[in-house]
Each structure stands twice: as structure tokens, then as C-alpha cells.
Image 1 (cartoon, protein in one colour):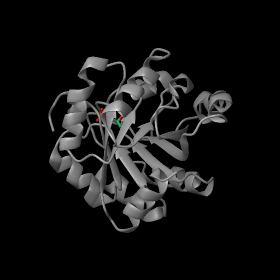
Image 2: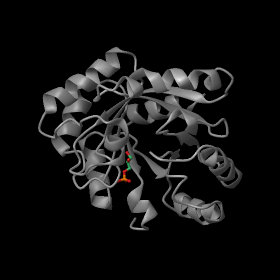
Image 3: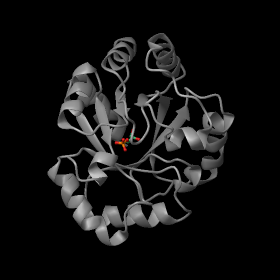
Length: 233
Ligand code: 1GP
């Protein structure tokens, strides 16, 4: 059980971490070894696996194959409890704190328990906060919730701090996959100043410049999906 403590230690030392997000729906098993080569070349610290619309059983085969090809820790970032598989190393146990849909605050979590009770996954309590990224992202569509506007810094900060008080170990600021606007510099830095747990940032990050800015403003771990898929990094 070392994923969370590795993130916490890196955060204390201001070492910046990178996760590549893979959607099992968007790549075939045959592509995995070349995908892994690209991920290793980028020196990514983690592979996140998840998607909003993945069919049953697909994630588990996908993660099994990833594990056969790499030592990089694999962390589930599930859109749905059916995507939980024991082949991974860890699980972001997400609560969508920016939303008011009980399905993503507690129902999905309860549904996952019968499986998790018998699993060896490292379960990492994570407060998941959607920020308006200028697109109707799939998280918004699936969760039927509204994101926090980029200019409502106070609400974003209070949501993150409430998550920390509730015992979340990580806060995840999400602009949505393929976001037009990344989480703003000011929003990242204000949230970071007000929490004492590591901060994950993702959504719409497409260039080295944007990656550097997210780190500079206080992200401990940055997640990149679309830009990796499109081979833009
Ligand atoms: C991770 O959902 C994001 O937080 C990934 O976003 O696909 O835009 O990189 P991108």
C-alpha cells in the first residue's frame, strides 16, 4: 500500500508527478505494448485507467494486459463501479464533491463495496471537483451535474477544504477530458494554498507549457489523456 504515501512524499518535497490516463474503450489490447513504450519514454509515474462509457469486463482485460507489460503503478479512475478490477494496484475512490447527484456522491461507492471487500487494491479516498472547462464533457453528461465556474474561486476552495475535512486524502480538480479551458492558474493556486493534502489537476492539458504551469501553480500530480492519445506530447 504505497501509492498514496508516494504521492504524499513527493508533494512534501515538491517533486512533480505525471499520470497518463488511458481509456480502455479507445485502445485495443494489441496496441498496449507500443502505448507502454510511449508512457515509459515520458517518465510517467502512474497510469490511470478509466472512462465514462466502458463496457463491462473490458477494463479488467485491459489492465491485466497493461500489468504484463509494465511496472508503472496502475490506478483505476473509474467512471462507474463496474470498472473496478483487482488487476490494478490502486483505486481513486472518488466522490464528485462539486455535484449534487447522490449517485456519484455515495451510491456508486456503496455498489463497489462487495467487490472491494475482497480485493487487494489500495483504496485512496479522493475528492473529485469538476471545474468548467468550456465543453460539455462526458463527466458532466454522465453525472448530470454542473461544474464550478472558473471564476467562483471561493466555492472551489470551500469544496476542496470540505473534502479535506471529510477525510479525503487527495483533491482532484478536473476540467473534463478534452476541456477547452484548463483549470486556471489562480484557481489551482488558491485551492493549493488552502489544503494540506496533495492536489491532482487534469483536463485539457495539451502542451509542455500548460503542464509546467499547472505544476508551478501548485498541482502535485497532473493527468493527461487526450494529448497522449493524439500523440501530441
Ligand atoms: C483527466 O479527464 C482528464 O483529469 C483528462 O483530460 O483528456 O483532456 O487530458 P484530457
